[in-house]
Image 1 (cartoon, rainbow, N blue to C red):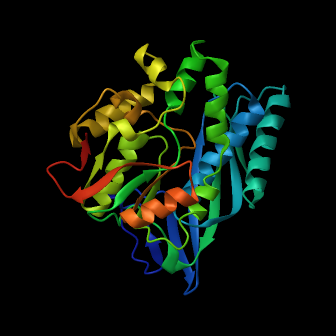
Image 2: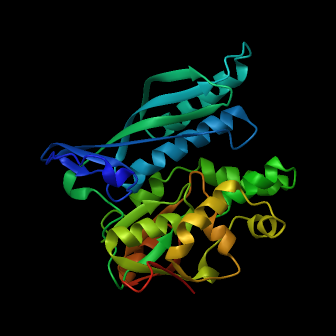
Length: 310
């Protein structure tokens, strides 16, 4: 459907929707560009303040994935319209505090009445046009680095089914609340070829986008991927979110090989980490600068399929 939409013919549009990148980029002047994104979803945790903060961190992530700095945010809210507004106040507070932590400003927003709660932000950031990071520059020989463990979707599903251990939920929440600001800052002065954040389409869904946009194949070593505590066990007992199966259905035809961790490689992430492609020497420097990150594979010349799991 997107392929049939009219393509803008504006020379200042630096990144549009053609390659499924994390945000759009529009040049205002030779030294300044706007980076814009939007993201919102239904509650993923029970605590309303935490839900609001996670929604904000998730929306901000797209800005960091482009190498930009967040500037302003507009909230997007769907609310049942009940008179009990304490939870709503906590959601808005949690989001506002996380936006403030990022150094950005909430300008306002828009709300509608809806039986299902939804919340998030449209975020605008700024960047120099010559410093924009996209998902389209991965080169054969690059190393692949991931900055957060996987498993938030499976753990959230286990929580909804009363299967999750409290310590596992707490660790997943800490991960989702962590801004990708420091992970993005660690890319400074390194030769980074491509970046994307790993969110709703899971690791393999976003890796597919990077591979297709770059014209390469991404080889992922499943044994090197790290998972949040409890995620592997919950996947084995069937705590599989619906989005995971949808991701698998969409992406599987692009994948060669497999592993015992396939479920988690398709797991939809909320406020996930950055997937970065960069030369091996710079990858080693990045891992020293940002020790939470870990290598997960490499970039190959284009093979029969854009993704290869070993």
